[in-house]
Image 1 (tube, rainbow, N blue to C red):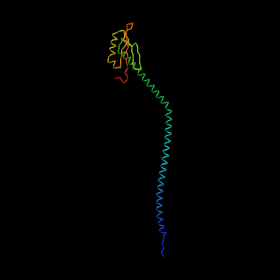
Image 2 (image 1 turned 90 degrees about the vertical axis):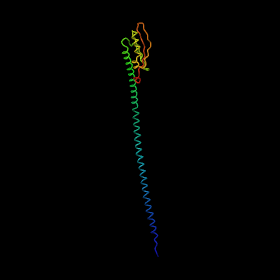
Image 3 (image 1 turned 120 degrees about the vertical axis):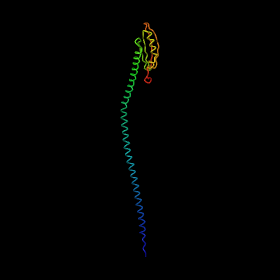
Image 4 (image 1 turned 30 degrees about the vertical axis):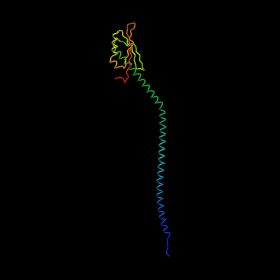
Length: 185
């Protein structure tokens, strides 16, 4: 009788199945390891970015609070700056007015006097009252007012109200518009 060993064939099949199972287990462990690594990396990045976000939110809140605290100081600076600009404008207008008076005092000569003055700030205009006891000196003054020298300094010169009072003095009212910085040549 011959012996048939069915177990040997069965063992060979089981050995192959064990090898295949071992290979599947190896691939499953690798896949699990990669998946676990990705999960822990994602969890770590999430924790890191949440921490950074919280730090940035706290920094934002502290800076917002600091800006809110400094707002009154900034408003004070803005008000002060506007006051300085206004004072500068007032002094500039005052300077323009003084320069106009000096100009007319020098250009008219010694026989014509500035007897009155009015400054209109809104129009940047200066009204002057000229007085002279010599009608010819006043006539010369009218020629000077029509000259190019005056028109180069002032944008508009208007003459009005030539009259003679009971003492024999002649008076003339003139109105000049002061040139602004953009109009000056």
